[in-house]
Structure formats: C-alpha cells, structure tokens
Image (cartoon, rainbow, N blue to C red; front, side, top):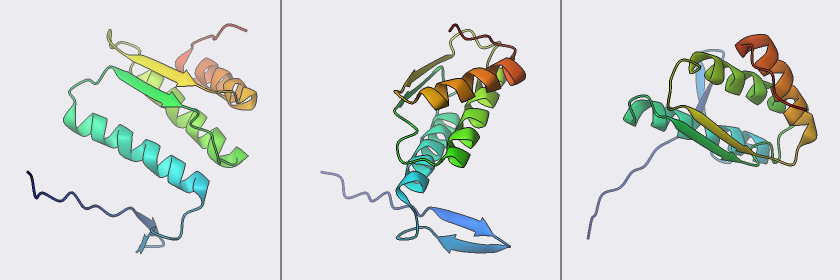
Length: 115
C-alpha cells in the first residue's frame, strides 16, 4: 500500500499577487481549471499526446469563458495540424459553443466544420 500524497494547489496570479483558488472559484472556473490542469499534465508527461477528450466542457461556463475555451482549443488544433496522431473528441449539447468552435477553427486553423 502506497503512502504517497500528491497534493497540489491551484493559484491565480493577479497584479503580481498569487491567490489560492480553493473556495474562491465559481463552478465555471473549476471546470476551466480542471481542463487546463489535464491539458498541462498531458503536455508534461506525454510526448506528442494524440488525443484530447472533453465531455460537456462548457457546463457552468459563462459566454466569455466559452469563447476563451473555443479560442484555446482552436489554437491547440492549429498547432497540432501536422501531428498525424492528433484527435479531439468533444461531446457537447451547447450549440452556441459549436458555432464558436466553428468560427475559431475557420479563422485560426483554416478548418471548415460541416453544418
């Protein structure tokens, strides 16, 4: 039985000060932090990780954060276009987010999603 402990903190830097996010995050901020942490872990521990799976990533996100997520995902897709094993699996019922992703992919990655 392992006695290892993997403790971590999620902090936000604002104006040069670091603020611990425990107890300060909205549900949407927790969703975004979770996505960012997972992507960072995949980038850190996997060489050329090939698959990102997101299930309903916009739950509890306001429009500004949805747009930010669409921009970030489009940037990831654009940067990984030449990687032969890259796949993004995105499960959502959020039509507005699908439209945001379609627009961002067209402008950033030159990718056209079907209607």
